[in-house]
Amino acid sequence: MPPRVLKTDSGESIARAAEIILSGGVVALPTESFYGLAVSVRDEKAILRLLALKRRPEKNPVLILIPSEEALRDYAASVPLSQPGSSNASGRAA
Image (tube, rainbow, N blue to C red; front, side, top):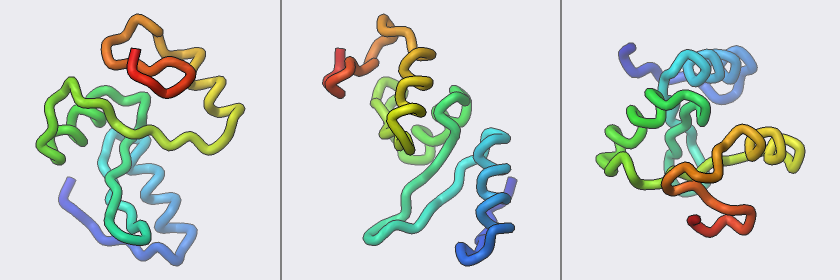
């Protein structure tokens, strides 16, 4: 899929960005000082694509933004603790 620029001031653009992420794509999001790259945390191919775009080794961890304590509990329940590079509850690498 070729890169596209979406205006950030419309609900349609936000919905389209969500569609792209949920279908395995990568979205660049503006922040206060740089652009962040967003993918679905539940899509291993998308995470590997993100690491390739950033030219980082597959073993490098990625930042996960979680919107609430409830969402954190749901996500944590689905992550095997024995996974290499996984974090424990304190956020320190296991």
